[in-house]
Image 1 (tube, rainbow over the protein chains, first blue to last red):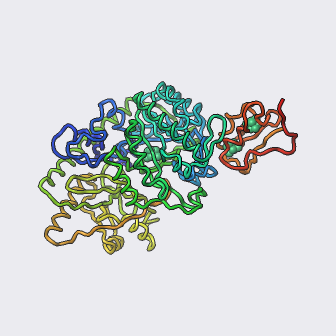
Image 2 (tube, each protein chain N blue to C red):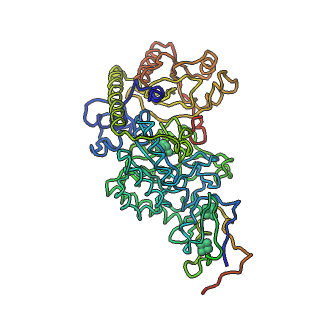
Image 3 (cartoon, rainbow over the protein chains, first blue to last red):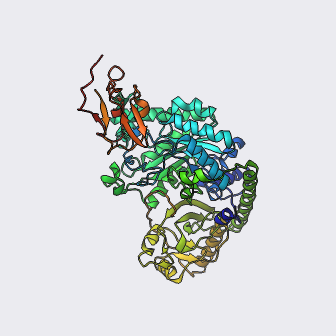
Length: 518
Length: 73
Ligand code: SF4
Ligand code: SF4
Ligand code: SF4
Protein backbone atom coordinates (compact mmCIF):
# COMPACT_ATOMS: atom_id res chain seq x y z
CA UNK A 1 0.00 0.00 0.00
CA UNK A 2 2.77 2.44 0.85
CA UNK A 3 4.29 1.74 -2.52
CA UNK A 4 1.07 2.79 -4.19
CA UNK A 5 0.79 5.98 -2.26
CA UNK A 6 4.26 6.92 -3.22
CA UNK A 7 3.70 6.04 -6.86
CA UNK A 8 0.58 8.03 -7.28
CA UNK A 9 1.28 11.06 -5.17
CA UNK A 10 -2.02 11.28 -3.47
CA UNK A 11 -1.22 14.68 -2.12
CA UNK A 12 -3.37 16.18 -4.80
CA UNK A 13 -6.31 15.63 -6.95
CA UNK A 14 -8.54 17.41 -9.41
CA UNK A 15 -11.95 17.66 -10.93
CA UNK A 16 -12.92 15.84 -14.04
CA UNK A 17 -13.99 17.56 -17.19
CA UNK A 18 -17.48 16.44 -16.37
CA UNK A 19 -17.27 18.06 -13.00
CA UNK A 20 -16.20 21.19 -14.80
CA UNK A 21 -18.97 20.86 -17.30
CA UNK A 22 -21.51 20.13 -14.66
CA UNK A 23 -20.45 23.10 -12.60
CA UNK A 24 -20.46 25.28 -15.69
CA UNK A 25 -24.04 24.31 -16.18
CA UNK A 26 -25.06 25.12 -12.65
CA UNK A 27 -22.82 28.00 -11.71
CA UNK A 28 -22.54 31.44 -13.17
CA UNK A 29 -19.27 32.54 -14.63
CA UNK A 30 -16.61 30.60 -16.41
CA UNK A 31 -15.05 27.40 -15.38
CA UNK A 32 -12.19 25.55 -16.91
CA UNK A 33 -13.46 23.24 -19.51
CA UNK A 34 -12.39 19.78 -20.37
CA UNK A 35 -14.10 17.73 -23.00
CA UNK A 36 -16.21 20.48 -24.42
CA UNK A 37 -13.87 23.40 -24.38
CA UNK A 38 -16.14 25.83 -26.16
CA UNK A 39 -18.94 25.58 -23.70
CA UNK A 40 -17.05 26.90 -20.73
CA UNK A 41 -19.26 29.85 -19.99
CA UNK A 42 -22.48 28.51 -18.62
CA UNK A 43 -23.45 26.78 -21.84
CA UNK A 44 -25.22 23.51 -21.47
CA UNK A 45 -23.97 22.24 -24.82
CA UNK A 46 -22.45 18.80 -25.18
CA UNK A 47 -22.85 16.71 -22.08
CA UNK A 48 -22.78 19.67 -19.74
CA UNK A 49 -26.09 18.60 -18.32
CA UNK A 50 -25.18 14.99 -17.72
CA UNK A 51 -27.90 13.34 -15.68
CA UNK A 52 -26.64 12.36 -12.22
CA UNK A 53 -26.81 8.63 -12.94
CA UNK A 54 -24.53 9.06 -15.94
CA UNK A 55 -22.22 11.29 -13.98
CA UNK A 56 -21.94 8.57 -11.35
CA UNK A 57 -20.91 6.16 -14.05
CA UNK A 58 -18.13 8.24 -15.56
CA UNK A 59 -16.60 10.18 -12.73
CA UNK A 60 -14.10 7.51 -11.70
CA UNK A 61 -13.43 6.22 -15.16
CA UNK A 62 -9.86 6.94 -16.18
CA UNK A 63 -10.61 6.62 -19.87
CA UNK A 64 -13.73 8.75 -19.94
CA UNK A 65 -12.81 11.50 -17.62
CA UNK A 66 -9.59 13.20 -18.48
CA UNK A 67 -8.75 14.07 -14.93
CA UNK A 68 -9.95 10.87 -13.36
CA UNK A 69 -7.10 9.37 -15.37
CA UNK A 70 -4.70 10.99 -12.94
CA UNK A 71 -6.27 9.12 -10.04
CA UNK A 72 -8.01 5.95 -11.11
CA UNK A 73 -6.61 2.95 -12.86
CA UNK A 74 -8.01 0.53 -15.36
CA UNK A 75 -6.91 -2.81 -16.65
CA UNK A 76 -7.47 -4.73 -19.84
CA UNK A 77 -7.45 -8.50 -20.02
CA UNK A 78 -6.47 -10.14 -23.28
CA UNK A 79 -9.07 -12.90 -23.52
CA UNK A 80 -10.35 -12.08 -26.99
CA UNK A 81 -7.82 -12.79 -29.72
CA UNK A 82 -10.19 -13.52 -32.62
CA UNK A 83 -11.49 -10.85 -34.93
CA UNK A 84 -14.12 -10.82 -37.64
CA UNK A 85 -12.95 -7.91 -39.77
CA UNK A 86 -9.63 -6.75 -41.16
CA UNK A 87 -8.42 -3.17 -40.84
CA UNK A 88 -5.60 -1.81 -42.95
CA UNK A 89 -3.97 -0.33 -39.86
CA UNK A 90 -3.77 -3.66 -38.09
CA UNK A 91 -1.51 -6.63 -38.67
CA UNK A 92 -2.68 -9.58 -36.68
CA UNK A 93 0.44 -11.52 -37.44
CA UNK A 94 1.99 -9.49 -34.66
CA UNK A 95 -0.91 -8.33 -32.54
CA UNK A 96 -3.51 -5.66 -32.89
CA UNK A 97 -1.71 -2.49 -33.93
CA UNK A 98 -4.55 -0.34 -32.79
CA UNK A 99 -5.08 -1.11 -29.14
CA UNK A 100 -1.96 -2.96 -28.30
CA UNK A 101 1.70 -2.33 -28.76
CA UNK A 102 2.53 -4.09 -31.99
CA UNK A 103 5.27 -6.66 -31.99
CA UNK A 104 4.65 -7.63 -28.40
CA UNK A 105 2.38 -10.60 -28.21
CA UNK A 106 0.27 -10.14 -25.17
CA UNK A 107 -0.31 -13.12 -22.97
CA UNK A 108 -3.64 -14.46 -23.99
CA UNK A 109 -5.69 -15.53 -21.00
CA UNK A 110 -8.54 -17.90 -20.39
CA UNK A 111 -11.55 -16.33 -18.66
CA UNK A 112 -10.56 -18.09 -15.43
CA UNK A 113 -6.99 -16.78 -15.59
CA UNK A 114 -8.28 -13.34 -16.48
CA UNK A 115 -10.67 -13.24 -13.53
CA UNK A 116 -7.90 -14.23 -11.16
CA UNK A 117 -5.68 -11.53 -12.59
CA UNK A 118 -8.41 -8.91 -12.14
CA UNK A 119 -8.89 -9.80 -8.49
CA UNK A 120 -5.14 -9.82 -7.90
CA UNK A 121 -4.72 -6.39 -9.48
CA UNK A 122 -7.72 -4.91 -7.71
CA UNK A 123 -6.40 -6.16 -4.38
CA UNK A 124 -3.02 -4.59 -5.04
CA UNK A 125 -4.16 -1.35 -6.70
CA UNK A 126 -7.21 -0.01 -4.84
CA UNK A 127 -7.78 2.74 -7.39
CA UNK A 128 -8.37 0.13 -10.11
CA UNK A 129 -12.01 0.83 -10.94
CA UNK A 130 -12.46 -0.37 -14.49
CA UNK A 131 -12.00 -3.66 -16.27
CA UNK A 132 -11.99 -3.49 -20.04
CA UNK A 133 -11.93 -6.19 -22.66
CA UNK A 134 -10.42 -4.66 -25.73
CA UNK A 135 -9.09 -7.48 -27.78
CA UNK A 136 -6.40 -7.97 -28.98
CA UNK A 137 -9.12 -8.97 -31.47
CA UNK A 138 -12.76 -8.05 -31.11
CA UNK A 139 -14.52 -8.61 -27.79
CA UNK A 140 -17.74 -9.59 -29.57
CA UNK A 141 -16.06 -11.90 -32.03
CA UNK A 142 -15.27 -13.80 -28.82
CA UNK A 143 -18.58 -13.42 -26.97
CA UNK A 144 -18.23 -16.61 -24.92
CA UNK A 145 -14.83 -15.61 -23.52
CA UNK A 146 -15.76 -11.99 -23.01
CA UNK A 147 -19.00 -12.63 -21.13
CA UNK A 148 -17.59 -15.53 -19.11
CA UNK A 149 -14.79 -13.25 -17.88
CA UNK A 150 -17.27 -10.55 -16.87
CA UNK A 151 -19.42 -13.10 -15.06
CA UNK A 152 -16.49 -14.45 -13.06
CA UNK A 153 -15.25 -10.99 -12.11
CA UNK A 154 -18.67 -9.71 -11.05
CA UNK A 155 -19.10 -12.70 -8.75
CA UNK A 156 -16.05 -11.73 -6.67
CA UNK A 157 -15.63 -8.02 -7.30
CA UNK A 158 -19.04 -6.46 -7.87
CA UNK A 159 -17.70 -2.90 -7.56
CA UNK A 160 -15.53 -3.09 -10.67
CA UNK A 161 -17.03 -1.38 -13.68
CA UNK A 162 -17.03 -3.42 -16.85
CA UNK A 163 -16.40 -2.10 -20.32
CA UNK A 164 -15.79 -3.65 -23.68
CA UNK A 165 -14.46 -2.47 -27.01
CA UNK A 166 -15.80 -3.69 -30.29
CA UNK A 167 -15.71 -3.00 -33.99
CA UNK A 168 -19.50 -3.14 -33.82
CA UNK A 169 -20.10 -5.79 -36.46
CA UNK A 170 -21.78 -8.20 -34.03
CA UNK A 171 -23.02 -5.56 -31.62
CA UNK A 172 -26.76 -5.64 -32.43
CA UNK A 173 -26.81 -9.37 -31.59
CA UNK A 174 -25.34 -8.85 -28.11
CA UNK A 175 -27.04 -5.74 -26.83
CA UNK A 176 -29.35 -7.76 -24.59
CA UNK A 177 -26.46 -9.67 -23.11
CA UNK A 178 -24.49 -6.48 -22.53
CA UNK A 179 -27.44 -5.02 -20.64
CA UNK A 180 -27.95 -8.23 -18.68
CA UNK A 181 -24.29 -8.35 -17.65
CA UNK A 182 -24.48 -4.81 -16.31
CA UNK A 183 -21.74 -3.56 -18.60
CA UNK A 184 -21.18 0.13 -17.89
CA UNK A 185 -19.55 1.34 -21.04
CA UNK A 186 -19.04 0.17 -24.59
CA UNK A 187 -16.51 1.57 -27.02
CA UNK A 188 -17.21 1.17 -30.73
CA UNK A 189 -14.49 1.91 -33.25
CA UNK A 190 -16.17 3.77 -36.09
CA UNK A 191 -13.91 5.14 -38.78
CA UNK A 192 -16.48 5.95 -41.45
CA UNK A 193 -20.14 6.19 -42.31
CA UNK A 194 -19.49 6.29 -46.05
CA UNK A 195 -18.81 2.76 -47.41
CA UNK A 196 -16.71 4.21 -50.25
CA UNK A 197 -14.32 5.53 -47.64
CA UNK A 198 -14.70 2.33 -45.64
CA UNK A 199 -13.51 0.32 -48.61
CA UNK A 200 -10.14 2.07 -48.30
CA UNK A 201 -9.89 1.08 -44.64
CA UNK A 202 -11.40 -2.41 -44.48
CA UNK A 203 -10.37 -5.01 -47.06
CA UNK A 204 -12.92 -7.52 -45.73
CA UNK A 205 -15.36 -8.55 -43.04
CA UNK A 206 -16.61 -12.00 -42.03
CA UNK A 207 -20.34 -11.94 -41.53
CA UNK A 208 -23.13 -14.46 -41.85
CA UNK A 209 -20.71 -17.27 -42.67
CA UNK A 210 -19.01 -15.52 -45.54
CA UNK A 211 -16.39 -13.00 -46.37
CA UNK A 212 -17.54 -9.70 -47.82
CA UNK A 213 -15.15 -7.30 -49.52
CA UNK A 214 -15.11 -3.79 -50.93
CA UNK A 215 -17.95 -1.32 -50.54
CA UNK A 216 -20.40 -4.10 -49.70
CA UNK A 217 -18.35 -5.07 -46.64
CA UNK A 218 -18.15 -1.52 -45.34
CA UNK A 219 -21.84 -0.96 -45.95
CA UNK A 220 -22.74 -3.90 -43.73
CA UNK A 221 -20.20 -2.87 -41.11
CA UNK A 222 -21.39 0.72 -41.00
CA UNK A 223 -25.06 -0.23 -40.76
CA UNK A 224 -24.39 -2.69 -37.96
CA UNK A 225 -22.18 -0.20 -36.07
CA UNK A 226 -24.76 2.57 -36.14
CA UNK A 227 -27.62 0.20 -35.31
CA UNK A 228 -25.67 -1.21 -32.36
CA UNK A 229 -24.90 2.32 -31.16
CA UNK A 230 -28.57 3.31 -31.30
CA UNK A 231 -29.67 0.14 -29.52
CA UNK A 232 -27.17 0.64 -26.69
CA UNK A 233 -27.93 4.28 -26.07
CA UNK A 234 -31.66 3.46 -26.13
CA UNK A 235 -30.96 1.04 -23.27
CA UNK A 236 -29.04 3.67 -21.31
CA UNK A 237 -25.58 2.20 -21.83
CA UNK A 238 -22.81 4.75 -22.21
CA UNK A 239 -21.14 4.54 -25.57
CA UNK A 240 -17.83 6.05 -26.53
CA UNK A 241 -16.81 6.09 -30.18
CA UNK A 242 -13.18 5.65 -31.16
CA UNK A 243 -12.03 6.78 -34.59
CA UNK A 244 -8.62 6.41 -36.15
CA UNK A 245 -7.60 9.54 -38.04
CA UNK A 246 -6.09 8.42 -41.33
CA UNK A 247 -4.73 11.40 -43.29
CA UNK A 248 -5.87 11.35 -46.90
CA UNK A 249 -8.68 8.85 -46.24
CA UNK A 250 -11.02 9.82 -43.44
CA UNK A 251 -9.52 12.95 -41.91
CA UNK A 252 -12.21 15.38 -43.07
CA UNK A 253 -14.87 12.66 -43.13
CA UNK A 254 -14.54 12.19 -39.37
CA UNK A 255 -16.48 15.43 -38.91
CA UNK A 256 -19.45 13.65 -40.55
CA UNK A 257 -18.82 10.60 -38.39
CA UNK A 258 -18.82 12.85 -35.35
CA UNK A 259 -22.23 14.25 -36.25
CA UNK A 260 -23.65 10.80 -37.01
CA UNK A 261 -22.55 9.26 -33.73
CA UNK A 262 -23.55 12.26 -31.68
CA UNK A 263 -27.05 12.21 -33.11
CA UNK A 264 -27.29 8.55 -32.12
CA UNK A 265 -26.41 9.27 -28.53
CA UNK A 266 -22.68 8.53 -28.24
CA UNK A 267 -21.46 10.51 -25.27
CA UNK A 268 -17.77 10.80 -26.06
CA UNK A 269 -15.71 10.77 -29.24
CA UNK A 270 -12.08 9.76 -29.18
CA UNK A 271 -10.17 10.55 -32.35
CA UNK A 272 -6.84 8.76 -32.28
CA UNK A 273 -3.88 9.23 -34.59
CA UNK A 274 -3.09 6.46 -37.07
CA UNK A 275 -0.16 4.32 -35.98
CA UNK A 276 1.65 3.24 -39.14
CA UNK A 277 5.28 2.43 -38.58
CA UNK A 278 6.45 0.29 -41.50
CA UNK A 279 7.94 -2.33 -39.18
CA UNK A 280 4.49 -3.18 -37.86
CA UNK A 281 3.78 -4.65 -41.27
CA UNK A 282 0.32 -3.17 -41.65
CA UNK A 283 -1.07 -2.32 -45.09
CA UNK A 284 -0.97 1.39 -44.26
CA UNK A 285 2.50 1.09 -42.81
CA UNK A 286 3.85 -0.72 -45.85
CA UNK A 287 2.32 1.73 -48.30
CA UNK A 288 3.94 4.57 -46.37
CA UNK A 289 0.78 6.26 -45.19
CA UNK A 290 1.72 8.73 -42.48
CA UNK A 291 -0.03 9.47 -39.23
CA UNK A 292 -1.29 12.99 -38.48
CA UNK A 293 0.87 15.63 -36.84
CA UNK A 294 -0.07 16.94 -33.41
CA UNK A 295 -1.65 20.10 -34.77
CA UNK A 296 -3.57 18.24 -37.51
CA UNK A 297 -5.03 15.97 -34.86
CA UNK A 298 -5.82 18.87 -32.58
CA UNK A 299 -7.44 20.85 -35.40
CA UNK A 300 -9.75 17.96 -36.22
CA UNK A 301 -10.60 17.43 -32.55
CA UNK A 302 -11.31 21.15 -32.22
CA UNK A 303 -13.54 21.08 -35.32
CA UNK A 304 -15.57 18.25 -33.82
CA UNK A 305 -15.64 19.70 -30.35
CA UNK A 306 -18.61 22.01 -30.75
CA UNK A 307 -20.61 18.86 -31.36
CA UNK A 308 -19.78 16.76 -28.33
CA UNK A 309 -17.17 15.89 -25.79
CA UNK A 310 -13.85 14.98 -27.29
CA UNK A 311 -11.51 12.64 -25.55
CA UNK A 312 -7.91 13.70 -25.73
CA UNK A 313 -6.03 11.60 -23.25
CA UNK A 314 -6.33 8.17 -24.84
CA UNK A 315 -3.02 6.32 -24.71
CA UNK A 316 -4.05 3.68 -27.24
CA UNK A 317 -3.16 1.19 -24.58
CA UNK A 318 -2.20 -2.40 -25.02
CA UNK A 319 -4.92 -5.01 -24.75
CA UNK A 320 -3.28 -6.15 -21.51
CA UNK A 321 -2.53 -2.77 -19.97
CA UNK A 322 -2.69 -2.46 -16.18
CA UNK A 323 -2.61 0.63 -14.00
CA UNK A 324 -2.93 4.36 -14.43
CA UNK A 325 -3.11 5.51 -18.02
CA UNK A 326 0.38 6.97 -18.02
CA UNK A 327 1.98 4.09 -16.21
CA UNK A 328 1.79 0.52 -17.39
CA UNK A 329 2.22 -2.07 -14.62
CA UNK A 330 1.30 -5.13 -16.65
CA UNK A 331 4.74 -6.63 -16.09
CA UNK A 332 3.95 -7.00 -12.38
CA UNK A 333 0.93 -9.12 -13.17
CA UNK A 334 1.98 -11.83 -15.57
CA UNK A 335 0.08 -15.10 -15.32
CA UNK A 336 2.92 -16.77 -13.43
CA UNK A 337 3.05 -14.04 -10.83
CA UNK A 338 -0.72 -13.79 -10.49
CA UNK A 339 -1.04 -17.51 -9.88
CA UNK A 340 1.42 -17.24 -7.00
CA UNK A 341 -0.08 -14.14 -5.43
CA UNK A 342 -2.10 -14.29 -2.25
CA UNK A 343 -5.23 -12.41 -3.07
CA UNK A 344 -7.83 -11.17 -0.70
CA UNK A 345 -10.56 -8.95 -2.00
CA UNK A 346 -11.23 -6.19 0.49
CA UNK A 347 -14.17 -4.18 -0.79
CA UNK A 348 -14.34 -1.84 2.21
CA UNK A 349 -10.66 -0.89 1.97
CA UNK A 350 -11.04 -0.15 -1.73
CA UNK A 351 -14.01 2.07 -1.11
CA UNK A 352 -12.29 3.97 1.70
CA UNK A 353 -9.31 4.59 -0.52
CA UNK A 354 -11.46 5.82 -3.37
CA UNK A 355 -13.35 8.17 -1.07
CA UNK A 356 -10.06 9.74 -0.07
CA UNK A 357 -9.17 10.29 -3.69
CA UNK A 358 -12.56 11.87 -4.22
CA UNK A 359 -11.97 14.40 -1.45
CA UNK A 360 -8.62 15.33 -2.89
CA UNK A 361 -10.08 15.85 -6.32
CA UNK A 362 -12.51 18.32 -4.83
CA UNK A 363 -9.62 20.20 -3.25
CA UNK A 364 -7.77 20.53 -6.53
CA UNK A 365 -10.90 21.72 -8.32
CA UNK A 366 -11.35 24.44 -5.76
CA UNK A 367 -7.71 25.52 -6.12
CA UNK A 368 -8.10 25.76 -9.87
CA UNK A 369 -11.26 27.83 -9.54
CA UNK A 370 -9.49 30.25 -7.22
CA UNK A 371 -6.59 30.66 -9.61
CA UNK A 372 -8.92 31.18 -12.52
CA UNK A 373 -10.71 33.95 -10.67
CA UNK A 374 -7.48 35.95 -10.71
CA UNK A 375 -7.67 36.06 -14.51
CA UNK A 376 -11.15 37.55 -14.43
CA UNK A 377 -10.10 41.02 -15.60
CA UNK A 378 -7.73 39.84 -18.32
CA UNK A 379 -8.83 40.56 -21.85
CA UNK A 380 -5.84 39.18 -23.78
CA UNK A 381 -6.77 36.96 -26.72
CA UNK A 382 -3.47 35.09 -26.49
CA UNK A 383 -3.63 31.29 -26.32
CA UNK A 384 -0.56 29.22 -25.54
CA UNK A 385 0.25 25.56 -25.04
CA UNK A 386 2.17 24.40 -22.01
CA UNK A 387 3.75 20.98 -21.46
CA UNK A 388 3.73 19.31 -18.04
CA UNK A 389 6.02 16.66 -16.59
CA UNK A 390 3.89 14.54 -14.28
CA UNK A 391 3.69 11.05 -12.85
CA UNK A 392 -0.01 11.49 -12.15
CA UNK A 393 -2.02 12.66 -9.20
CA UNK A 394 -2.73 15.97 -10.94
CA UNK A 395 0.61 17.40 -9.77
CA UNK A 396 3.78 18.60 -11.53
CA UNK A 397 5.98 15.96 -9.98
CA UNK A 398 8.29 14.59 -12.66
CA UNK A 399 11.91 15.41 -13.46
CA UNK A 400 12.30 16.52 -17.07
CA UNK A 401 14.87 13.83 -17.69
CA UNK A 402 12.66 11.08 -16.31
CA UNK A 403 9.51 11.93 -18.24
CA UNK A 404 8.12 9.25 -20.53
CA UNK A 405 5.49 11.65 -21.70
CA UNK A 406 4.38 15.23 -21.31
CA UNK A 407 0.82 16.34 -20.85
CA UNK A 408 -0.15 19.30 -22.98
CA UNK A 409 -2.53 22.03 -21.83
CA UNK A 410 -3.88 24.90 -23.85
CA UNK A 411 -4.40 27.99 -21.75
CA UNK A 412 -6.18 31.25 -22.40
CA UNK A 413 -8.16 33.65 -20.24
CA UNK A 414 -10.96 31.06 -20.39
CA UNK A 415 -8.82 28.64 -18.41
CA UNK A 416 -6.59 25.63 -18.87
CA UNK A 417 -7.70 22.79 -21.07
CA UNK A 418 -6.02 19.43 -21.42
CA UNK A 419 -5.44 18.77 -25.10
CA UNK A 420 -3.26 15.68 -25.21
CA UNK A 421 -0.06 13.98 -24.27
CA UNK A 422 3.23 13.49 -26.09
CA UNK A 423 5.29 10.43 -25.54
CA UNK A 424 9.03 10.75 -25.61
CA UNK A 425 11.99 8.51 -25.13
CA UNK A 426 13.73 9.05 -21.86
CA UNK A 427 16.07 11.99 -22.13
CA UNK A 428 18.04 10.94 -19.13
CA UNK A 429 18.81 7.28 -19.67
CA UNK A 430 20.72 5.55 -16.90
CA UNK A 431 21.65 8.72 -15.09
CA UNK A 432 23.47 10.61 -17.83
CA UNK A 433 21.92 12.78 -20.46
CA UNK A 434 22.46 11.77 -24.05
CA UNK A 435 23.40 14.38 -26.61
CA UNK A 436 20.96 13.18 -29.24
CA UNK A 437 18.22 12.69 -26.67
CA UNK A 438 16.91 16.21 -26.68
CA UNK A 439 16.09 16.58 -30.39
CA UNK A 440 13.00 14.33 -30.49
CA UNK A 441 11.73 15.97 -27.30
CA UNK A 442 12.08 19.42 -28.85
CA UNK A 443 10.07 18.17 -31.81
CA UNK A 444 7.41 16.65 -29.59
CA UNK A 445 7.03 19.91 -27.65
CA UNK A 446 7.55 22.29 -30.56
CA UNK A 447 4.04 23.72 -30.28
CA UNK A 448 4.51 24.60 -26.60
CA UNK A 449 5.62 27.88 -25.10
CA UNK A 450 6.82 26.37 -21.85
CA UNK A 451 7.36 23.11 -20.04
CA UNK A 452 6.61 22.96 -16.33
CA UNK A 453 8.73 20.42 -14.48
CA UNK A 454 9.64 19.32 -10.97
CA UNK A 455 13.30 19.67 -11.87
CA UNK A 456 15.50 20.10 -14.91
CA UNK A 457 19.24 20.23 -15.60
CA UNK A 458 21.00 23.29 -17.03
CA UNK A 459 21.90 21.65 -20.30
CA UNK A 460 18.42 20.61 -21.44
CA UNK A 461 17.10 23.90 -20.11
CA UNK A 462 19.41 25.74 -22.51
CA UNK A 463 18.46 23.49 -25.41
CA UNK A 464 14.80 24.16 -24.74
CA UNK A 465 15.44 27.89 -24.51
CA UNK A 466 17.27 27.71 -27.83
CA UNK A 467 14.15 26.20 -29.35
CA UNK A 468 12.00 28.92 -27.81
CA UNK A 469 10.56 26.78 -25.02
CA UNK A 470 10.83 28.07 -21.50
CA UNK A 471 11.58 25.43 -18.84
CA UNK A 472 9.97 26.35 -15.52
CA UNK A 473 10.65 24.78 -12.12
CA UNK A 474 8.69 27.33 -10.11
CA UNK A 475 5.61 25.17 -9.86
CA UNK A 476 7.28 21.95 -8.74
CA UNK A 477 4.86 19.71 -6.82
CA UNK A 478 1.96 22.12 -7.32
CA UNK A 479 -1.40 21.24 -8.88
CA UNK A 480 -1.22 21.18 -12.67
CA UNK A 481 -4.13 23.32 -13.78
CA UNK A 482 -3.67 25.89 -11.10
CA UNK A 483 0.00 26.20 -12.10
CA UNK A 484 -0.74 26.41 -15.80
CA UNK A 485 -3.10 29.31 -15.15
CA UNK A 486 -0.59 30.99 -12.81
CA UNK A 487 2.15 30.61 -15.42
CA UNK A 488 -0.12 32.08 -18.06
CA UNK A 489 -0.91 35.05 -15.87
CA UNK A 490 2.78 35.67 -15.35
CA UNK A 491 3.37 35.26 -19.09
CA UNK A 492 0.75 37.88 -19.91
CA UNK A 493 2.32 40.25 -17.41
CA UNK A 494 5.74 39.86 -18.97
CA UNK A 495 4.30 40.34 -22.44
CA UNK A 496 2.50 43.44 -21.14
CA UNK A 497 5.75 44.86 -19.79
CA UNK A 498 7.50 43.94 -23.06
CA UNK A 499 9.95 41.72 -21.16
CA UNK A 500 9.15 38.99 -23.63
CA UNK A 501 7.24 38.98 -26.88
CA UNK A 502 4.50 36.53 -27.66
CA UNK A 503 5.26 34.40 -30.71
CA UNK A 504 3.07 31.77 -32.28
CA UNK A 505 4.52 28.26 -32.00
CA UNK A 506 4.72 25.67 -34.76
CA UNK A 507 3.52 22.10 -35.12
CA UNK A 508 4.76 19.06 -33.22
CA UNK A 509 5.40 15.37 -33.78
CA UNK A 510 3.28 12.60 -32.35
CA UNK A 511 5.40 9.71 -31.30
CA UNK A 512 4.21 6.45 -32.84
CA UNK A 513 3.18 3.38 -30.90
CA UNK A 514 1.07 2.64 -27.90
CA UNK A 515 2.13 3.85 -24.50
CA UNK A 516 4.33 1.46 -22.63
CA UNK A 517 6.21 2.79 -19.67
CA UNK A 518 9.44 0.90 -19.41
CA UNK B 1 -10.84 -34.67 -47.78
CA UNK B 2 -9.76 -31.78 -45.74
CA UNK B 3 -8.24 -28.41 -45.17
CA UNK B 4 -5.15 -27.99 -43.04
CA UNK B 5 -3.57 -25.11 -41.15
CA UNK B 6 -0.08 -23.96 -42.10
CA UNK B 7 1.28 -23.73 -38.58
CA UNK B 8 4.10 -21.33 -39.43
CA UNK B 9 1.59 -18.75 -40.68
CA UNK B 10 -1.08 -19.18 -38.04
CA UNK B 11 -1.36 -16.32 -35.53
CA UNK B 12 -3.24 -18.53 -33.05
CA UNK B 13 -6.01 -15.98 -33.07
CA UNK B 14 -8.64 -18.71 -32.61
CA UNK B 15 -11.09 -17.11 -35.03
CA UNK B 16 -11.52 -20.30 -37.04
CA UNK B 17 -12.21 -22.63 -34.13
CA UNK B 18 -15.82 -21.67 -33.32
CA UNK B 19 -16.74 -21.24 -36.99
CA UNK B 20 -16.12 -24.83 -38.04
CA UNK B 21 -19.45 -26.63 -38.38
CA UNK B 22 -17.78 -29.96 -37.66
CA UNK B 23 -15.68 -29.05 -34.65
CA UNK B 24 -12.69 -30.19 -36.67
CA UNK B 25 -10.43 -27.42 -35.38
CA UNK B 26 -8.74 -27.72 -32.01
CA UNK B 27 -6.03 -25.95 -30.10
CA UNK B 28 -3.28 -27.57 -28.16
CA UNK B 29 -0.94 -25.23 -26.31
CA UNK B 30 -1.52 -22.36 -28.68
CA UNK B 31 -1.22 -24.46 -31.85
CA UNK B 32 -4.31 -24.82 -34.02
CA UNK B 33 -4.94 -27.97 -36.04
CA UNK B 34 -7.62 -29.42 -38.28
CA UNK B 35 -8.59 -33.05 -37.81
CA UNK B 36 -8.81 -34.29 -41.43
CA UNK B 37 -11.22 -37.03 -40.47
CA UNK B 38 -13.75 -34.46 -39.28
CA UNK B 39 -13.31 -31.76 -41.94
CA UNK B 40 -15.86 -31.88 -44.77
CA UNK B 41 -14.54 -28.71 -46.45
CA UNK B 42 -17.82 -27.24 -45.21
CA UNK B 43 -19.62 -28.90 -48.10
CA UNK B 44 -23.31 -29.13 -47.30
CA UNK B 45 -23.00 -26.44 -44.62
CA UNK B 46 -21.74 -23.30 -46.29
CA UNK B 47 -20.70 -22.05 -49.72
CA UNK B 48 -17.17 -21.39 -48.55
CA UNK B 49 -14.90 -23.12 -46.08
CA UNK B 50 -15.41 -21.15 -42.88
CA UNK B 51 -11.85 -21.42 -41.66
CA UNK B 52 -10.57 -19.92 -44.91
CA UNK B 53 -13.13 -17.12 -44.87
CA UNK B 54 -12.42 -15.99 -41.31
CA UNK B 55 -8.65 -16.48 -41.16
CA UNK B 56 -6.81 -13.14 -41.18
CA UNK B 57 -3.67 -14.51 -42.79
CA UNK B 58 -4.04 -15.37 -46.44
CA UNK B 59 -2.86 -18.86 -47.35
CA UNK B 60 -2.98 -20.26 -43.83
CA UNK B 61 -6.01 -22.57 -44.16
CA UNK B 62 -5.29 -24.53 -47.33
CA UNK B 63 -6.29 -27.76 -49.02
CA UNK B 64 -4.38 -30.73 -47.71
CA UNK B 65 -3.33 -32.57 -50.86
CA UNK B 66 -2.27 -35.61 -48.95
CA UNK B 67 -5.88 -36.60 -48.45
CA UNK B 68 -8.55 -36.97 -51.13
CA UNK B 69 -10.89 -34.03 -51.79
CA UNK B 70 -14.28 -34.02 -50.13
CA UNK B 71 -17.40 -34.21 -52.24
CA UNK B 72 -21.06 -33.56 -51.63
CA UNK B 73 -22.64 -36.44 -49.79
S1 SF4 C 1 -6.99 2.31 -25.04
FE1 SF4 C 1 -7.88 4.29 -24.71
S2 SF4 C 1 -9.86 3.74 -23.96
FE2 SF4 C 1 -8.64 1.93 -23.67
S3 SF4 C 1 -7.77 2.10 -21.61
FE3 SF4 C 1 -6.38 3.02 -23.01
S4 SF4 C 1 -6.87 5.16 -22.93
FE4 SF4 C 1 -8.62 4.05 -22.16
S1 SF4 D 1 -13.12 -26.37 -44.15
FE1 SF4 D 1 -14.95 -26.20 -42.89
S2 SF4 D 1 -15.12 -28.22 -41.96
FE2 SF4 D 1 -13.04 -28.07 -42.68
S3 SF4 D 1 -11.89 -27.28 -40.94
FE3 SF4 D 1 -12.47 -25.53 -42.19
S4 SF4 D 1 -14.34 -24.85 -41.22
FE4 SF4 D 1 -14.03 -26.93 -40.51
S1 SF4 E 1 -8.06 -18.19 -38.07
FE1 SF4 E 1 -6.14 -18.56 -39.14
S2 SF4 E 1 -4.62 -17.50 -37.90
FE2 SF4 E 1 -6.46 -17.68 -36.64
S3 SF4 E 1 -6.14 -19.56 -35.46
FE3 SF4 E 1 -7.29 -20.12 -37.29
S4 SF4 E 1 -5.73 -20.70 -38.78
FE4 SF4 E 1 -4.69 -19.61 -37.17
